[in-house]
Length: 186
Image (tube, rainbow, N blue to C red; front, side):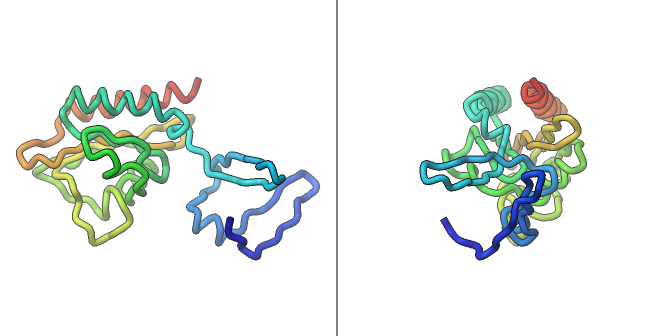
C-alpha cells in the first residue's frame, strides 16, 4: 500500500474528506459508492464499488448470449472499465478503461449508434489514448441507468468492414441495458 502523506480527522458525524487530488487520480466522482474493507491488521481500505462487476458471472452470460445472437463483439462496462467481453480475445478489452465516447453516452443517458457509413466519434471508445484509431467499424452504446444514475454500458460492435449495427442490434443493446438496470434495482 502506498502512503499519500495526507492526514484527515474524522468529524463528529464519523465522516472523513477524501482530498480532491486523490479523488481525481482515482476517478472518484460525487455520489460514487465506495466499499469499505478492514484487513486483519486493522487497516481500513476504501475501494470503488461496481454493481456491474459485482454481478460478473451474470453479466458474462448476458454478453455471451448477445454475442451469439448478433455475431458481434459485446462489451459490458461499469463507469470506469470494461467488465466483460464476448467475441474478442479473452483479455483484449477486459479491465481496459472506457473512453470519453462511452462516458459521454452514459452521462447523456441515451443510446448512440455509429454505423459504418457514419463512424465518427470524438475520442476513443476504449482506452485513454486520444490518438489511437477506433478498433471497430461500427458500434452501438446503450447506457445502464439505475435510479437516474448511469452505472455502465452495453456495447455491441464489429470490426467487419462489410457489417454495420442496425436497428436490431440497437434494440438488443438497449433491452440488455434495461434488463441489467432492472436487475440491479432489486
